[in-house]
Image (cartoon, rainbow, N blue to C red):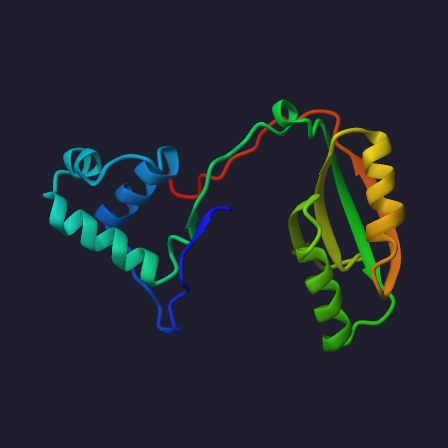
Length: 165
């Protein structure tokens, strides 16, 4: 499980300067970089770099550190985008759906979207049979499901986690 950092209690706006952005850029490319390695590249000593990283973690700018895995190399070669609409759209019904989705390990991303559908899920499975089992026995059994449309990913053209350039 990735290390999830505690969210900041404050809703106060957080301002990033050029050094913060440089640190974020380096961490996005290598989250295992040492504070010393980062300090050398941004031309600061280790103490201010450590303090800046800690401050960005506490403010929720840095949400977590994780390892990106090639899904095809861990027997999850089928990727599916599922569009889901709910029958009811009240807060309680939506909350139940979200709670249920968070329990499904096949769902690796979930977005609340606008338009014809309410949610977009990124699902990984070992095979078409594995996905069929997930769709019929898990996703479709979730309370309040109106409609599900599955789109099968034929190839990944671009996939990144880099936000700061």
